[in-house]
Image (tube, rainbow over all chains, first blue to last red):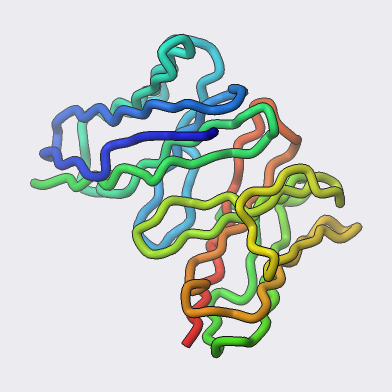
Length: 109
Length: 114
């Protein structure tokens, strides 16, 4: 079966660092994606990991450990506009992109 | 702007009716995916087409069907609508099947069934 787990909600303060974790169990693995989604809007691509390790993109970094079925998204220097849902998604061998239920992040001043 | 166009943006209809949602992928993208997102729910994978052929199916109801046309646009048909079908329906496209092909999402079609 396919199972992707993320915390439902997180809060953080402007300027701080937050780490959003994602664990997955899927039938096959062909990459892990992170998307950002503001309420009522389309998800937008943040990062992609297929090999173990850290991928850095400005204030956003994503880490993958395939042996542990684990990823995290690290957001630095948080801004108010970072308040959104963050979706972890895994591409299985069947080419389906399966999404977790998302983590709603609230950034406070 | 992702380059993926979905119409209509909003649709209100009654139970038992049938609707068609339309998606035009980004220019050059061969893969089209459909997702359903109910209130406070994650994105539920419905179906994937690649260059006109069905490639993968999720938990798509038998009342729902989709197709991808030769010009690569796609339609999602929802019939015998029920209250629980009210949701945001997203279409996404990518240039290739699998691999590093990130998905680009349209703005969604918000369906309300009364």
